Amino acid sequence: MKKFFLSLAAVFAFSGIVSADTKEIFSDNFDKSSFTKKNWEIDKNTKTSSVKFVKEGADNSRCVKITNSEKGVVKITKHLTGLNPNTFYRVSAKVKTQDVAEGRGAILYLDVFGHDSDQPWNASKFLYGTNDWQEVYMDFVSDEKGETYVSCALGFPGGTYNGGKAKGTVWYDDVKITETPKDALYMRESKHMVLAVDPKHITVDDKTADEWLKALDKAYEAYEELLGVVPYGGAKIRILTTPGMEPGYWALAGNPILWNDNVDVKGLLNKFKTHKDWGFGILHEIGHVFSAGTAVGHDYGAWNWNDEIFANFRMSYALDKYEAVISQNTFYMGDNIAYYKRAYKKCIEKGNLDSGDAIQYTLMRIAEIYGWDVYKKAFHKLYKTPNKELGRFSNNYERFQCLMKFVSEAATEIAGYEVDVTRTCYTPVELEMIKKALTK
Image 1 (cartoon, rainbow, N blue to C red):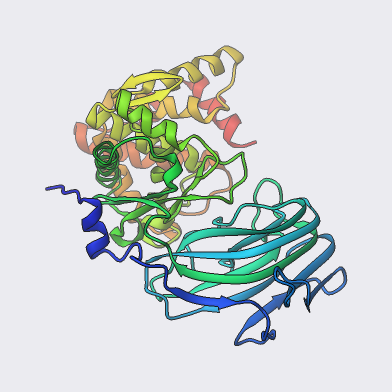
Image 2 (cartoon, one colour; image 1 turned 90 degrees about the vertical axis):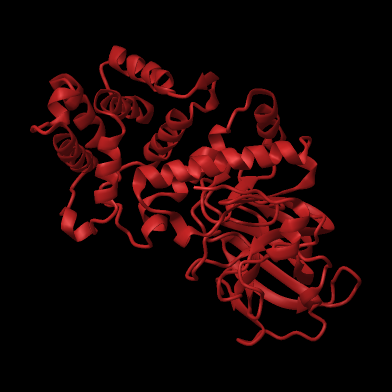
């Protein structure tokens, strides 16, 4: 399949990714606002919170004041329509806080919960404590209908590791939405990928960035070859830096893949320049994007008990296929089974197999014995099989057995005689360890 890559000028010329100007799409300084279904909708806990118009704005004009004495999610939300579909936009607001604590604090985000979106965790930076007026922002991609829901909030409804919910007081003023300015993001585009990151992270030249995207294109096509499907109907996967993400997250899958603006983005690109390292983190997130739900548009993934394992497993196939370089504490070229074998050995020494990396080693061992084709055949069939045809699973070990059944059928077809991979590739002791780990 022929591959092509475009210059930055070409990207701007045809794709509509970034505006050549900063045309204002929406603005509200709350001087004449009222909360109606046609304007801003309020969502609050009436017992412990309040949302008011007050004359305490950034320029001594009116603004919105949100207060909650207990942890929760209090927000005003604007439903915007008429945007260009699948286009980068920037929403900004002036924010002041007092005694904000817990969760994601005071936050500007897309109110996607209950709405169709592939970027539910995208947000501005989180503000805590007491701060004078400052501007916060986030970039986002409008959906295929050209719609979005923007929330000015205290607290966040999503179940991130810190719970999301917050308390305190926050003032919002001068909310604006523009098409993302052309110099606000470093943009490169390839056959399957769009890179959109804060320019502060870029120390490599355009050629290096394009070569990296070419490597990601190869990974994308390897995942497609392994699974027989592509995510989001084949739409390009965007990689977008976001200022609003907890420190514990390096990046989050979706379209766009959200790349934490506070991690070492620069280091990954520099490692590709110096070592041709494809980048474990981004390959892992692309692997997640190929999970059953996004790939086929339905929840056909009942057999998949742990997509952290399978995101890395998909990656391992791509690395093996292209003899690619990857760093996992040390550098590997091609087959990275040695990394997972170390985890396996540590578990065996302790008398258990309760590590995802250790179980992945046993899956890769099957590919070493029978070849990757057994997985291609198994996954292609699995991704076409609805959940109701797979039956019901009471635990993860039964999901593991389901996968082994499909892999055994594929191995039988290739070998020409009956094969049960649980007998040929596992010892009874290993199976008992995996059963114990997956039925906890």
